[in-house]
Length: 371
Image 1 (cartoon, helix red, strand yellow):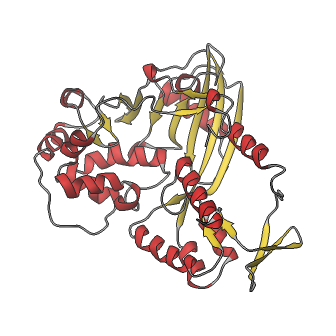
Image 2: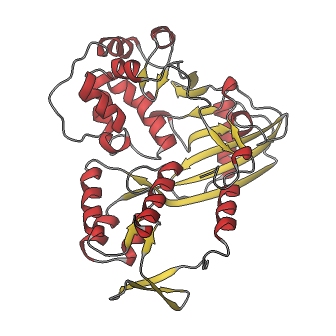
Image 3: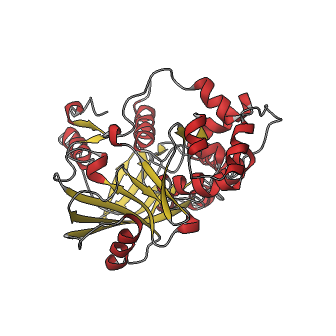
């Protein structure tokens, strides 16, 4: 999609030569060991020498390599899945901080089949996650771990709007109601009624539920969402610690869930010799900037007062794929297919990332265009 929009030259990669992420354990920052793929260790010595897990957990990780496939298992929580393979310590100091940072979710609630389907499949084929990852990982590096646009992802949105302007009518306003008609739909937006043959609901599932009714609305409204607040703080001087940032497990957490040193992770994000800290907080409460700053001082040793701060709120924005999510989505898709012209897209169904949203949007467009 970026190539189609002519933005390929604007893509930048993360500074992987500086890649290092820390997890707090017993009051100190411990680097994640090399070779860790999510929670699966693929290198012996880095894990053996790491202070992130105790020897009991390390021995259990080594024994897990010899695990054999068992009978089919029903969907489980990620916490149960990881505990079964590597023990509770791996849940507390690997799965929980990683999933909180990426999904804003709790591994005790999230579905392994929907959130980590590759690992669930490796368990079926190999029994051992470690042996499965080693057997299936690509022989060559896939390139940089992260990519973005030099001007930020807002540059992408602007390019999309520019590409469709003049080819369709853009009305940026809230939708108050939707009614079915013999030809399709009537949509009330901004006080006016619009007629449509096809309608794509590419919003959060709880907002889609407000515009629909019956069992479909009930199922959509039952998809849980988490909220988060992002606080950016700018400081004079370089970041106080190397690497991309750190994660705080629930067992050691106060306000900050995770922090990224944005200028270290990506070029063009902060002037040389300065620090831009992007802190992820849980919940919807109004953040106390002074408290966040003091916590950064304690956790990472930032010096001086912040030169500026910005607050970004994301209420009920991240879909949570709970246990049984796949069955819920199958029923949603079946019911949606019974409504001619109705299409669903977004991060509530089969992936929360931007590529997943692009994929579901393209699928909806292809259905509208037909063969």
